[in-house]
Image 1: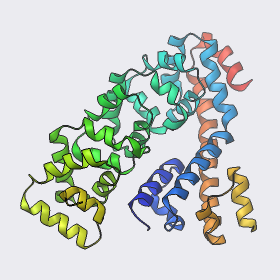
Image 2 (image 1 turned 45 degrees about the vertical axis):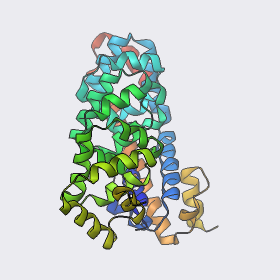
Image 3 (image 1 turned 30 degrees about the vertical axis):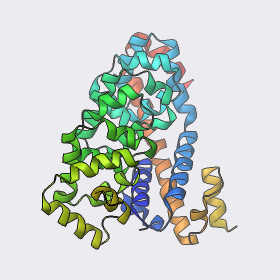
Length: 262
Length: 71
């Protein structure tokens, strides 16, 4: 394995292929950038392979009223089919359909949706609905899915979603965040309690790799905020960070940010 | 370019990332098999879903839905 970025990318690739990460052992030494490029290629190939079928489903929304299409969708369409077809539906119509679907079904569909392929559809979903679905997805531990959505949701929807997560859940999500450039924006939305929970998850449950990934993308202002809160944690937390640094579970750059010594 | 390289490139319809080209033929063939398996599972799932969907469409709409889905 060549680092936490690559480990996170392997998780995302496994999700894309619907296999366990262990089945991708042949990629253990491939750099994260190449894994990311490979994932995009595979996702595209899987979509293109059956695009004609997805297009047929999507075209249903043109021949029946939205209310009927929504009812039919939830009643008859498995989430995978609905997710892939959603990428081909006119965004305004998809937005209207979403308002008529149950939260559980939306969560099922979201779990199969490649958010990067349907940003216009996702933008039409009300922020409060995104937040509610995010809570359901977190309960189901769909970290890769949530990490993909973070890259494309509106700032209001991001705010509504982040408010739903515990600190430990945020570490899981941060580890596989699709768009690391939003890490500062996400961190800015965190309450003090959520940050404390993140830190506690690292030193109580050994989630140093996840904290390492999150910290590696933080700019100075947010890193300083985290360091200030870490300074108020028990001495045992500092000792745990030292031990994680010493045995390689926590990177030196992230340690410097966490302890304010960088 | 090896046969293994060509097979995966054709499957993905794109030039392979450097790190994938650098894999051994055996590893690249194993990756190709995983992708083909995922594609087959997706195709099976879709055919089953289309058949199931038609069974659940309300009777007055079944004709038009069948026409759109199956042609």
